[in-house]
Image (cartoon, rainbow, N blue to C red; front, side):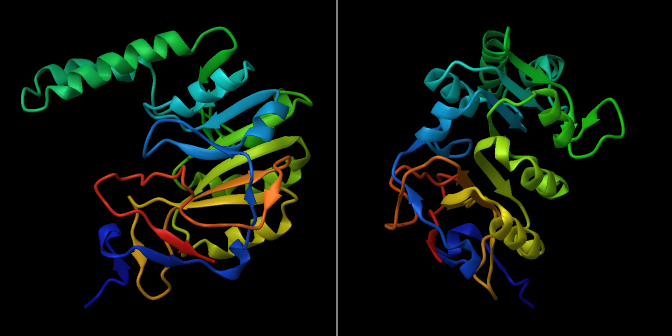
Length: 260
């Protein structure tokens, strides 16, 4: 019996529904590290932003670092799953992993990077974003209200919680200059993704399939998609995916070639 899901390295060409139709931005640049953690965004949106809000950092804030190099503005990074205490605990645990010595150096580097980057107007806020129901949780609406009328660039990678605040993104879209968002379980949430794409005034300017996730065999739909939306980008009709700045999230597997 087949599961209806293919492994990433078993397929290269994927097909998206027509509602993903888009025009690419002429001024796309890549922010963030190579492979997983990097995203393509419009340089025009960076220039017009007054604050960057990142939802989800784990142990990688390379996107936020690159953004800060392009424009010095306040940055708020929300993630309650990590902290300096968590990184220190991982460092201590890694000492006994003599079979994986690279883990010690990874967590040591992470700690130094965290202490160097998060200070002054660049803040890590230990809260999950989705709904308000405890001190560890907050809503996107509350976050945006608290920053006032600033022009906001949003990076969203919250492992499925993005569906909790798509309506907020629509309500607050006049303040959003650019948005990069990772959609998870796209097959079972396709109606919500379609509704968002059709209702937002932001322009869909880039699509990338995360090849760490599988593809449905029956529909050829990737289960995780990284989408970039823009308010200010100059557009062109030419749209070849992957873009020449794209990289496979998993470098050991084939990149996906997307047809819309």
